[in-house]
Length: 308
Length: 270
Image (tube, rainbow over the protein chains, first blue to last red):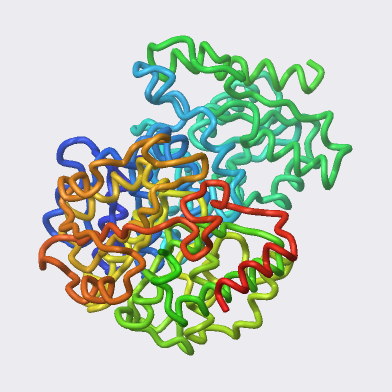
């Protein structure tokens, strides 16, 4: 997914001189091809995220479209004031490509785990927050970023994730995608949790329970209409995210229903990372298991919500 | 001593600050008074701009990174007719363009919204890079406070400006040696400041920040070198022109000013 995202930046830059790539201190050889081909549009600025965000803002003020890439925690926690003031307050078209959303960097411990990035980015006016589910969708997202006039936070997963998105379902920033219809229940998901939900939906189908999957790739601006419409037609809803339960996708769903359709609230439950920093290392999948974010638990949560 | 240095124009610009302050009853007085001559010389003799077309592409960019000193900038911009001076009577009123920190898009001539400290220089580096890529001859000037450069983001940006050899970027430091709590030497000593800036790759000069002739002379030499960014450490006096406020951290920001306070200030600048 990251490889696709960066290759997209290269492709965009080939056709549009406004497009710039800015990295902090990324792995050796990252985007070498772009660096060699378009050296004026490639920047590697060192471990200095506060400065990099301000620099990107200055470039955007002058008409450029910077794509900034580094590890998600350093692109959010480290330079939050710069993101808020320099990018969001000035409402500039800078794109933040954040490596390792959720538990991707499990072996590196809690300093490197982006567990609350969606919540803190979503809190900022003018910021769009997007978590694609696979590399194909990343490609569609990146191609649609060029003319979006506001800042965008793009959350990357581990990479090598199974391709589940479909070109014919299209992609529009701010519009959720029904990946699977289901008459009984609905998983509302974002990022690669969509894969997990599709897996759980298959298990449920084998049990005779018909559950759909609504993929909310854009958590902000939130597709209130699409989400509520999907929720109102089923008996039970489980939101699933690789993110702390407070402030992310599940919160966005509950907030929208609370404001517009409070009678829908009882049918919704949330699955996400518990409200604490990670206490284990291991792998992304072992951490997800530790957090209770597994296909089995999705099945159990859905059955419970359906009264089964 | 200080008063001797202030000519009629410096007093007039300060009286515009006092007028705006009066409408709000207070503000960052000391922080504004120290920068008047720096701004005056920049706008009188150095910066390219058209006040009637503040977004003209070939303008020079000035960023007041120490946004709390905005009253001085508002005064100079009004004097240069970016907007009618009477508008400053709305300072800090609910629907005013003119807040306690300057905002891009609200105030004509303001390039960046500042106030949170340590933001102007990184943004200035980005603008300077952009101008160079566009083969523009426009230059970027960033005025920082001294307390402000406690923020690490400035030093990240200084390193980057040197790496990119941004000769179109000049950093000006309003070195009045007093920050909100007290003397900079006590709170977080910046010395040896000039050596630090030089070691970060900036060709750096020092000047009396209230000496109009000296400021003009040194600013006209910019850039000091064709392949390096420049810095000018301007030695200033916090609260310059107001004897009771000079060098006094209590006047960094002042609220609850009385009619008598304003009378005193008007008399000094009359």
